Length: 176
Image 1 (cartoon, helix red, strand yellow):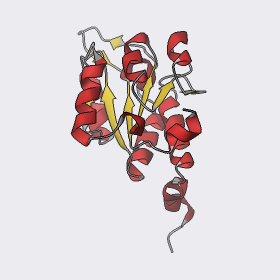
Image 2 (tube, rainbow, N blue to C red; image 1 turned 90 degrees about the vertical axis):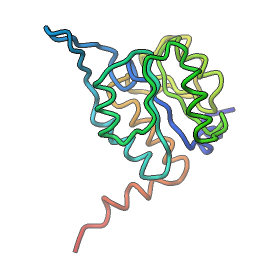
Image 3 (tube, one colour; image 1 turned 45 degrees about the vertical axis):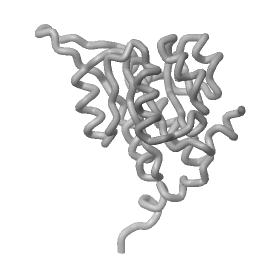
Image 4 (spheres, helix red, strand yellow; image 1 turned 90 degrees about the horizontal axis):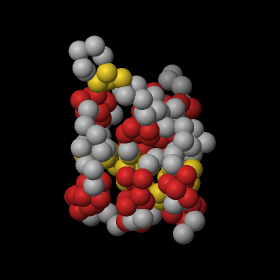
């Protein structure tokens, strides 16, 4: 299937964290607390997906309290962390919503993401993803992970589904 055909079916976008929602850097302070930097554009893109009725979820191989806080800010209900076998988390999300594989987009960057890439209708790799992951994707973002790649994918999905007007309504009609 090609990108244009696949994108029209998407009802759920699942996002990896390290290397996708972040640039892959892990910051640990002197007390051992981990922090992460998230890009505001990605958060806005996630909000846009929600606004047009597309669900989002997170699957991460690592566990971080920062991810829980960011997901809460963005109203992402389904957050699966610490899954070395991400396919288990994928199946749980898929079952919960009864979505078919072809209705799901997954954004990833590394080999751990490949088992999901082989299943979903729209596998997307960020610009700085592993070459093998890029080869298995239907779309490779222009933006690197943690620098607006999720926003890029969100806009493409929304525009290809002819729902961009829903986003623009808020910004085109001044009050008064």
